[in-house]
Length: 194
Ligand SMILES: Cc1cc2nc3c(=O)[nH]c(=O)nc-3n(C[C@H](O)[C@H](O)[C@H](O)COP(=O)(O)O)c2cc1C
Image (cartoon, rainbow, N blue to C red; front, side, top):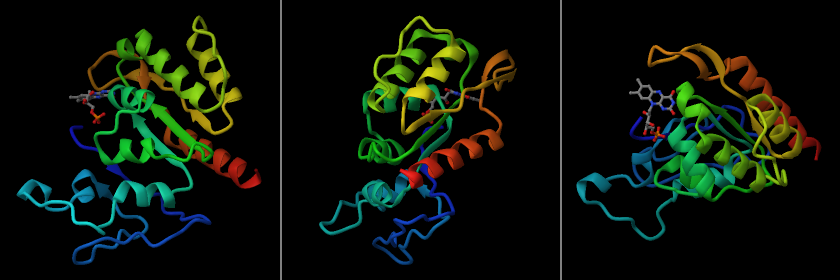
């Protein structure tokens, strides 16, 4: 998980714009997988940014109708909460139009999920999404329900309980994909109705 990718959804929505860039076949057509390396082709070989070249994370930010991270690991949750932008995904987030919908599906070990950092970061994201003050003392379910009720643009699809990658059994696994898709559809419909 050392590098991240920005993966546009297949549906372009009303703001569809051609994502083009330098280099042979440099267009970033719909459905393409964009890697950190694509932000700055040739950087590893000493290449330098050339004035006028495409800046992928800004193109993606202007193009996207919805920002979805599934799974959202503890590391990236932290970056989103504090604004750290050291890869393509987090640069898109740092430039994000906060009036557009966001769907996050956290996934992490139970002990990481239960750590105070997690709720601190979720509450920070909710505050930035217009939720106002969310009390710190709430249990998991109440916390996520309040965040989702009060944030016009943010939907957190909470993790589920099962056996995790580390072998522990507990809460922390990414929610089922149909539940995440349903959340995306709900948020897109809400945005279109607004
Ligand atoms: C097999 C394996 C599974 C992992 N699963 C998760 C996970 O589900 N959630 C999480 O927060 N971190 C998980 N980690 C730890 C991440 O790899 C680590 O936090 C990494 O820094 C994430 O980087 P990224 O946010 O740039 O993807 C896992 C690590 C390993 C080796």
